[in-house]
Length: 149
Image 1: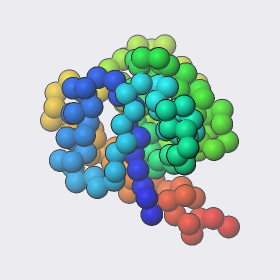
Image 2: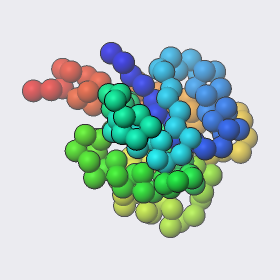
Image 3: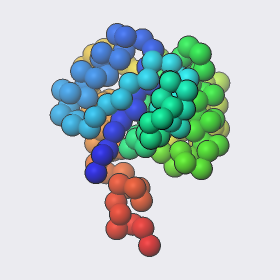
């Protein structure tokens, strides 16, 4: 089974830290990186820059909010409004601790909202817990065919 992670992150330093934290925690899943909201949607739906390629069906989406082209809240709205992607676990992973961002993210259907820790060791621990929960413990019909009736 091809269990990819879609990391939507425009900051190269945060991308590096996220990839390093996943590696350090021995998360073996392939990580596809989209560096703006439009690229993320193109990957998910096989459109635009990704036209002609099958849509990406990641096991989990790690979504930053402050993105160029299309912001993370709009990406989240589009993910949840499409039958093909509405059930993909989507974790907002952002530096924003603004109440309006948290509330809007949940209103638009995020599964979890995590504020990026500034400290690298805390970030590694947050990613370890993310990987454990979303990639090992969490069950979906896609990840566990025995759940399909």
